[in-house]
Amino acid sequence: MLDTKKIIPDFPILGKKINGKPLIYLDSTASSLKPAQVIRAMDDYYQRYGVNIFRGVYKLSETATEKYESARSTVASFIGSKEANEIIFVRNATEAVNLVAATWGEVNVDSQSNIISTVMEHHANIVPWQQLVKRKNAKLNYLDITEEGRLQPGQIENKINVNTRLIALTYVSNVLGTINPVAKIIKIIKEINPGVKILVDAAQAVPHMKIDVNNLGADFLVFSGHKMLGPTGIGVLWAKGEIMKDLPPYQTGGDMIREVYLDRTVFNDIPHRFEAGTPHIAGAIGLAEAVRYLDSLGMDKVRRHEEELAEYALSNLTGMKEITVYGPHTAGDRAAVVAFNAKGVHPHDMAQILDRDNICIRSGHHCAMPLHTRLQIPASCRASFYIYNTKKDVDLLIEGILKAKIFFE
Ligand SMILES: Cc1ncc(COP(=O)(O)O)c(C=O)c1O
Image (tube, rainbow, N blue to C red):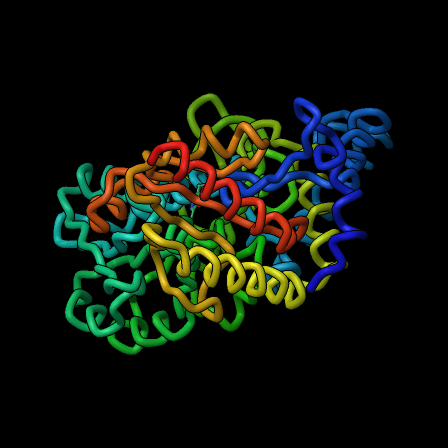
């Protein structure tokens, strides 16, 4: 496992007590905590060279520009891309999906088209497609899951046809924890219809495992900085240059232009064409620092650490009476996020009882209402683990759940 004794002191928030008790943070799937290194890198930007990029020829602006563009290269190599211009900085994974829907979708989807998503998606990978098919009078179909919470691969062949334009699927479910065999699925899709584009929602994958866009076969990949030790307000759309280079812009204004006349505009090249206005400069710098932090741990080690925690949490939770655990029960193809329900305890009540001991879990539908409908439950509790969590955190969670069960008996 990772050396958490070394890692935990890097996270200032974990050193603070709330009402005299330590923080047991089990909600990294929503947002991870931030190490001092990331906070310092952003602070350094504001303190030493916090000016705008591209617009100045003076030194400070050149430094800011160089740091922003080098953040792009750092993020590109983290996901195996050799082309920094295939990284478009956005606000978050949600904006990245919206950008694809509003640009590629606008040009390539018509009333004959269909798009395929899955019932296990976060709303961010459903609602933009619903809106697009509504605008275009196209169709949106969904791949279902098995009772264990895995995609049913056989369905893909049945759902794809010559009019399928895009498949939008998650790499890792933010509720079930299922790690989809994305590379295999993409291979199957491209064999059936090479023209289908694939968007992978990697918001729960990039922070937790080694991703190499070269081996994946996807056309678009989206993720958020705040789930991978980085700041809020910065996210990434990785998209193949050959797809993006001729697309119309997403938003318009400064920085995304090459020339502007009163009656027309010549747009900039990628990626700047898709980054209108002043971007989140400090955010990009913070994200690059987060990437360096994860790289220094090694993503294979991060994955192994989380797999062990998932295994430990699953073995404890599945052994408990009147607890239902959703998603696969094997840690090997599962992320360290565990959704569960305790009989007779509403998830919000469970979260509140745990909060009395500063154990932070999430309760609700976790922005996956269609998945909860599919599971025939209104809500669930969700505990998620990251590099700073230990088996002791799992023990405290189990103790807390037992307490809550007794309280509501
Ligand atoms: C799988 C998945 N996709 C997309 C998102 C949306 O991320 P953001 O809110 O940062 O845009 C989340 C957030 O929880 C997620 O878990």
